Length: 330
Ligand SMILES: C[S@@+](CC[C@H](N)C(=O)[O-])C[C@H]1O[C@@H](n2cnc3c(N)ncnc32)[C@H](O)[C@@H]1O
Image 1: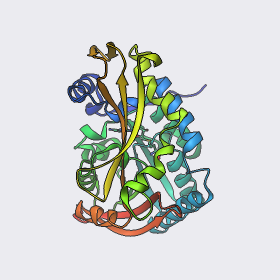
Image 2 (image 1 turned 180 degrees about the vertical axis):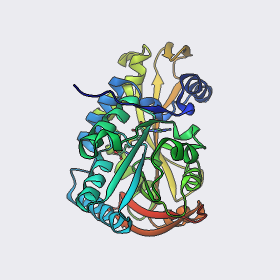
Image 3 (image 1 turned 135 degrees about the vertical axis):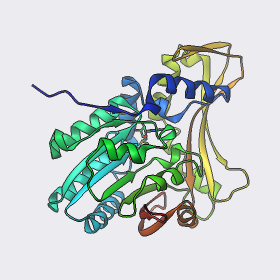
Image 4 (image 1 turned 45 degrees about the vertical axis):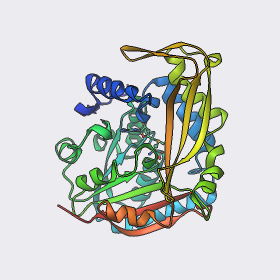
């Protein structure tokens, strides 16, 4: 018989806190990104989308880029490490990192952290197959409401001297400046962070954004995002989902892909305990994804509290990975 999984739930992910956050986002007619992953159906459709579109396991150059960054992290780790997978999803990437470290005979503990219960369970089970369940400490947490995660990690996970945080494909979910300083505060002086950033490739922001738009505006992403509306009682004929690439104010360095649902008719949308009324032609911002420029992102990282030790850029210029430490250091 399989043993039950023991999940720790950070208070920022308690249902009452979540409800307040969602209500606040809806005053601006926006959907918090984490809400698209939390239900079983949403998690399953996101997984289908990931399998169809993520370059991580499909594009040979990306496979190599991730292998190189895993090797670089491995070289810096002494004999024992705790990997903290921030927004780990199914932990597809963290598990590959774990495989590298296991091969190098490192002793590993893994803390998968995600706002989605189905995904954090999947992550913990996959890691448990490699490390044994006793070395895996799954945590449900909302990174937007977890300023004290640093201290909380110290009490809920093993006190190994070195920790390696991962933050893969997570920056798209947070407005510029919103999460990096918080993460810098969680790191101790001996900890590392492996972070990937989604980029607008080519010579200029908006043409780069246009180039990556098909990675979002496709049937799998429509199906995944529509799940939220479907669960709230909206039907496909009630409106239309449109994607756009937009700059961030007058910045030539940061932009976002946005998906908005425009209602064709008056509709009621059920979300958690509430019902929201929409008029014809009203819009709901369903999704966004922030993208940066490879030329200026390193300066952003440094401004927000990190020292870059090594970096890797995908050949198509659409993604980069940085291995960092904190500048402040506790
Ligand atoms: C694009 S996926 C990345 C998953 C994984 N890191 C990878 O690269 O394969 C985004 C993940 O972030 C999680 N997420 C989104 N917003 C979050 C938040 N505020 N706090 C914690 N997790 C969040 C989602 O549940 C999802 O698993």
